[in-house]
Length: 370
Image 1 (tube, rainbow, N blue to C red):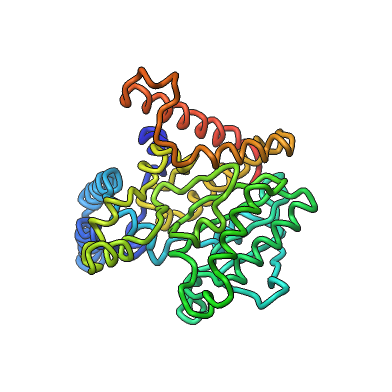
Image 2 (spheres, rainbow, N blue to C red):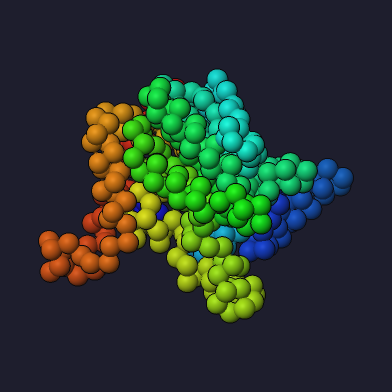
């Protein structure tokens, strides 16, 4: 999605002092400190600083636009990992209704790192599957910080088959560093569990929409990432490995994580250029953590519009298109019709078409009550 469309969907103003600041947001912290000092002088000394405060707030918003308009890949990773960024559980509470959680894989146990639930979203009854990172330390440890075991992916697949049986579409919310790398997960077949999910999701006879809402790391993300529509939030990232893991392998030190983030091409802008994802969902100015309500509304609008489109297709056509889409991933050769065109001539046409399509979906979806 192009930058102009994204900016148009962002909120008009951003409140101060609502979330912790990231390392690249230090200029914002200094402006907020100036505003707080002016407000303190107004309260304690009776001095009027209305114009100065207004000027500083305008400066704050301008700085925020500048910083988030030119994020580096590593800064995008930091935003995706923000401690206040909305999780799957937050979206489950705010944009879905009539939620009925489902537990267990009927084989080993109930992995809390993956949540499965029947729910309603707008006019659609759906099965929601999402990674759960947890909020407090105790909950995060119980969820392994969102890194699922094999039983988590087997639970997800079992519920997908249940959704297929009842003709319900599947909505996957991806937010994980990767699958759990421990000995127990290896002993119980984590690689097999993910591989089976990839195969079965490719032929599941019901619509599937997957959205990367934060971190999309390694096979842990791919285990829920085979879908008719694959999208990601504007400041999420999607990668074969974390920047730290990549740096540790290539340079034997995690200190080179910023270089690794650049090399991995993990941002929404890069992935949509490579046709790895279908759409980019806009976030509020400053990231989803600054206004979770607007982030949730944009996410809901996209999913509703996508499901409305996909439900119009016959099941055989749906599965065929999904499999064709998967087979086209990783193609490095241009189609014959594009062979005579330069790279610069081809790319803008595809990006413009994709942005127009997503804008049209979001516009239509605003007419539906979430």
